[in-house]
Length: 361
Image 1 (cartoon, rainbow, N blue to C red):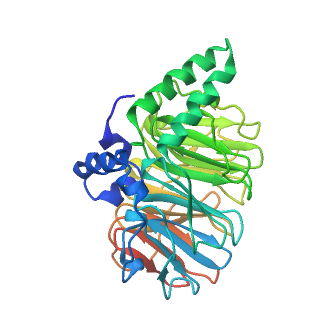
Image 2 (cartoon, one colour):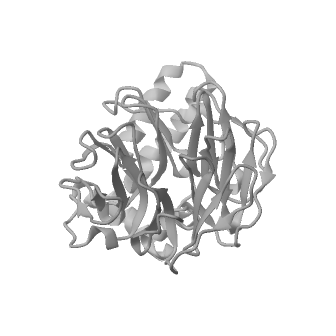
């Protein structure tokens, strides 16, 4: 696995915002490799909502946002007031967070860390990290016997063990309180079926021999879609057991993907590229109207449609079959995600922290 840190975190929807400059990435990775930031708890900050926040999710009515240096910010009033989580065991940058219900959630980040909470984000525990995931991959490789997939997984696992925990996890999907899948740089793909008590390497399920980075995971029913660099799209129609490469409408990097309530799939990425499919990725149609800035997140709206954010600090929306519309709002620094709030309105997350937008936006 070639170490191209600028590719791991340069184009990714969250990594580049976490660090501000690609030159800082090797230092961050080296720190994670020494287990410093993985072993050191997040420090208290006076205003967690002003930290660099890279991702957010709803735990019931609560907003949980995560970001650099292990900051986890909580709001119980739709982003009006914030406080920091009581306990976070790491100070690495956290890149994604999802919840199964109001209590059970997971977050992932640099160093291959996987955190879990059972109280709606107040307290977090470290379930795994890059070193332990590498060992899990090595162990899984021994179960294949003469199957060629075992040899491939063994080579990949050996490289992971050699490199140490220097690769970030970038997204995750929470099926329920027991099953969670995580993806990341160099084609990392791991899964738990027991709520995180153990994590299993699933790299062998992917048609990804070059180990291209995986930036986004989206699921509807038994169909899964993984999106990554250089136009990589991987689809599973058997509930995530096997993934095959499908044709991509764009050869650049995809940074976001989601399945909508309208029956669509939406993928988005560099240079304002956004496409939709109504037939599980067999055919794609471009969504017009986006500025040329990279689209870094895409989330399905409860009322239908998709909410997106870009690195120009803009929040955008598209309804079924419609073009993209930039929502009115203040000028913002580069964003990493836009989140729909339960009581209406939107929450923008990024370099400037958390910004609540008008309820009518």
